[in-house]
Length: 112
Image (cartoon, rainbow, N blue to C red; front, side, top):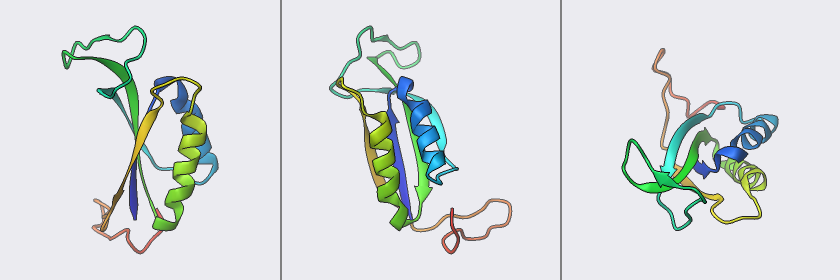
């Protein structure tokens, strides 16, 4: 299994979510975040929570089977890309296993 973390501009997240859902990726987690990358969005200002100057981003996380990862990555890129700088970044990590909290069952054997 693969864990995909994508940091995306807030104004692109809705189209990314819809495209992923249309391609069979139904379960994902979204979080508000602030980036500290090289690109600083126009109008970036100090955060009230973190006291750094930066750009708002949305962190999208999803876990999928190994053979599905490339399709998810391509979908995210196609729908998050803009003509401007600072479109974000995607990280991929291996997941050894996952368990349902309610049953304790391993999800490694099943489709996510």
